[in-house]
Image (cartoon, rainbow, N blue to C red; front, top):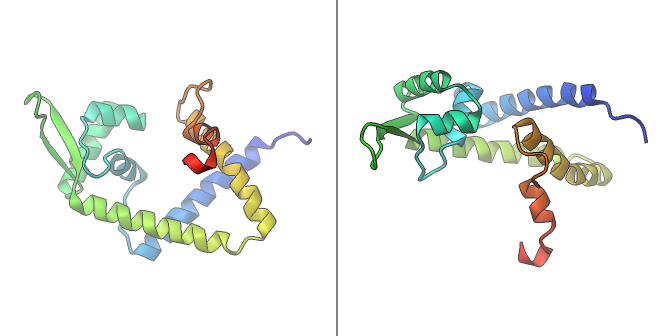
Length: 165
């Protein structure tokens, strides 16, 4: 087996991500939201609210950075801050209906574009890509600070028989 080319993988991931983001924004006619704001919306799924400190921890950003993001996003109508029900001195944040709509449109367009592109791959290429998905998910988790000894969601799913999934 040849030596793994980490530089080549890194050189492919970033342009792939940027190309998919640009194509998705164009396809769904979405505004240019910074990646950090998309991350905040992703951290606030429909029906949830979180404190700014929890958002900062999830996104691995500093609290002041998240505070600045939330201020800008609140001004754009993307998040709503309210006093925490359990402690009125604290604040909780939730994504607005506008943000959730943008995110739903983004996810739908993103998935459709990937489906269109992968439909043009040969069967062997598609099989290789499918086999690589659990490894890419684990790599993403490791780069995001996951415990290398803990199995990822994909690895946990892989141990569950197909009929029970």
